Image (cartoon, rainbow, N blue to C red; front, top):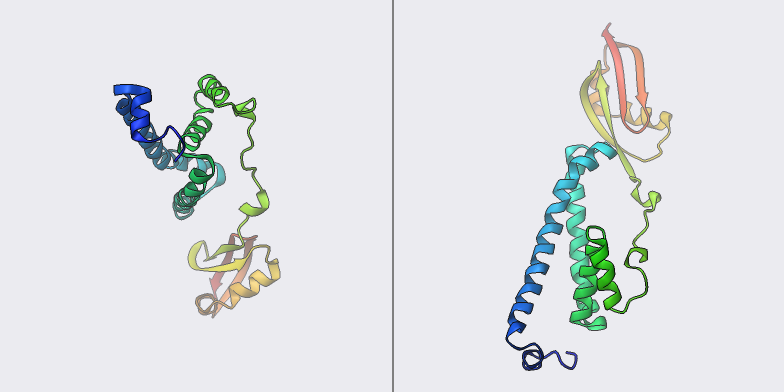
Length: 198
């Protein structure tokens, strides 16, 4: 613990208001924790619309957010030992405040003695290659009705995808004794057979 950080020293420095400062800090931290855990639920409808995510993938967004929160919690002891309780708490709170209260955050950032400006600090950059799926789920339909789903590596060629579709037991049975009039192939998404009885 840093010098001047024991309870007795803090009481001597701040007097009776120490307990209120402490309680306020804990309340702000608790509110930030609750907001961060619920904000993803507000964002999911917009993410689903913009990125065309179904319900299953939207749930993975929420799970991924919780994993990121867990990783952040695991790094907290290192941050506390490296920068101290006060600097870690204040630094993270100011960075989180910056988008919604820019002027207040800028003033607090300056008070912390950090370089100008809080808004020019580096954040993780988006790497599109990391967001690509390694596998895709292909829906197989016959006359527009779902018959099966198969998982293929992303970037599978049309010929390989059609071969994998035909190797499905359900599809092989469904295509037996029918005449295929048309094959509709949407890369990485859909294979639809238009058929009629022979």
